Image 1 (cartoon, rainbow, N blue to C red):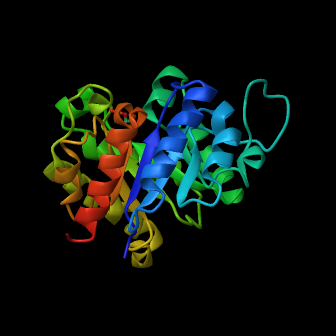
Image 2 (cartoon, protein in one colour):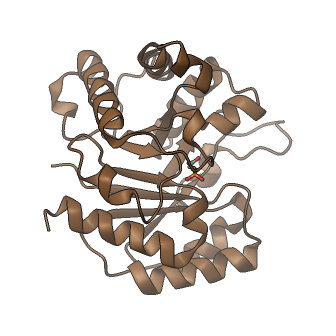
Image 3 (cartoon, rainbow, N blue to C red):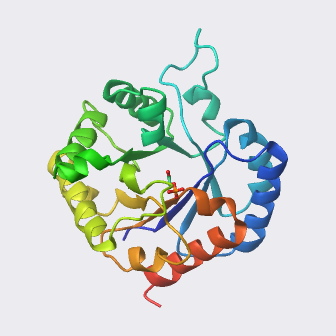
Length: 254
Ligand code: PGA
């Protein structure tokens, strides 16, 4: 069985003080919610203070990015070794990084390898943009991104794939749950074709793109969607709490 996973991607929002306050509220609300793995991904500067807030709670910490080298002359970058021990998860290949920071397929592949080497759990983001969707190229794009990110990766550990159609991120236009379900199934088959079917129960496929309190149920009722990555709505404690609780309820079959 795959444990559902809900990830809060705060992006470049919250000061350290705001982040600590938000994490405290979430700890109080979500610390005892069972049946779902909860991960907060604050900005780098807040990782240390928030790790103290979350110490001893069931909420885990993740980073939003990583560099692929362990150390060296890379001004402004954060290495896997710096994150190891501080957080368990790391988001890799988010479309905002691909678009605004020119992250290539090759760089994403290196980051996946570096994260796994440091025993961090990668949350690999894949998804088509509007043009690719219009042209009917969604599956081809996603499969290409997946294969290239995992090229030469022999052991995928506890990899999570986040399917995030670019056109659905921050737009209020979430994808249709049915379609996400079939895409999630395709993603699982690609993984299976490379790594064999014992990954069926290990690799989680989650959805991201305008997830809200109102639409989370529809996504979680779908068999192949194992959770969500939440941007905008994760900045409001009450919304994120409700999203996590609904996920836990639905996946537990209540
Ligand atoms: P959104 O962002 O929920 O604000 O659409 C999701 C994401 O980019 O991870």
